[in-house]
Length: 220
Image (cartoon, rainbow, N blue to C red; front, side):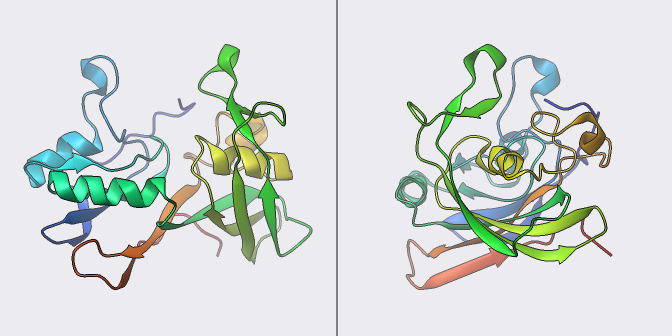
């Protein structure tokens, strides 16, 4: 869901790393992770990944308007092992976001439970009675006059967690058509949220590995 027609580039995906078990891809903003409803939404990361890596299998997703690192498995055993890492929170995920305003502190921890806002789907909302546990660590990387570049580390994996948590902190992500104000949406032609790093233990070789990709947005 976007107020902008932010079209992703066409052609092959940006491959950050590849081996026999998985490929780490740098998804552009505006590209779906999986096909949507209708032929106009058939183009997606997985449809492109299958062309480049026959037999590629889904492990996790990013929102359409979020850019950055996404992993696809290259076999069924790899999919099972990697999906388990995400489910067991053994995958370290780091995001970079450009947010409205300047947080009063340099870092912090957000612990606010999330549930789907059914009448307003796909929006989510905070609910202390029935919401699912959602935790995010954050820290400021750089400050500007009216915005800040922040690092976000989700400790849980709820839908729209980072977007909603930053809005609740009082600093919505610029370009966020679901949780920012019209003025904050207008400050960017895209959602300024990027999956910058993935860190995990390699399922075949063992040993901790980390992969990264810089966002296309930032502060001068």
